[in-house]
Length: 292
View 1 (cartoon, rainbow, N blue to C red):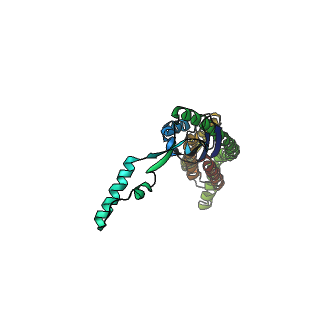
View 2: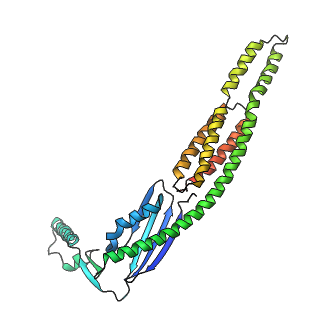
View 3: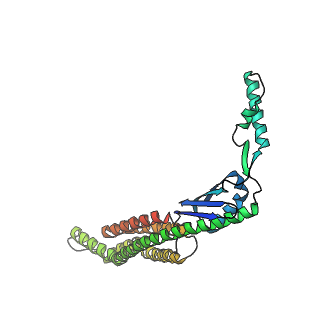
């Protein structure tokens, strides 16, 4: 079953140490683009969480928002980012020197800079936190996956209906195509009869012209390939893999065959039907852009 790339999921997990909340939002993207926003204190788990997301959500722009609330009674400890503080001191001294300013660098100025002093939870058990984050993320991904599957079902119904319309139009092309050459032959004969009132028309030359025309407007090979691509496209509906790119490729091939049929048709009725096929294929391709 196909899945959409659009979805939303949220999970809240109450652990022994804290409450965890994870939200996931996904939209269309050509590849997998995973971004995780989380408190600095949890950054140790970022790589594992990103790997966990990539294992289940194969394609799309995926934004993950992680929060952890340890409650009011959790012990908090201030923490100094020594390297960052040193860089700020270096910058302030450089500014003083460049502009001829007197005085040293006040401690209050350095301490006021963002992330120089942070507060972290005392005695955080990283193994326990990682386990809780993993469980919460799984629940959030389950919610996203359910929505993406539901969206995928809706997309599949719409695409299937349009493919049936394409098949009906192609059937009309198959029925009309064999009539084009004989009708052109009759029109050519009538024109020649008007030009040569004595009826002195070379039947061999006429047959040769008709054969050339019939070969030039023959679209039987394009119809065979078109049907093959249609069968492959519909077969992808039963796949459990991410098939969006395969569908997009097959639609490109279907468009290619349709363009060739249009250029070779030499018949107003056929051209009208081919244009209708192209219109349906374009609508299908718009929908396929949202399939994982």
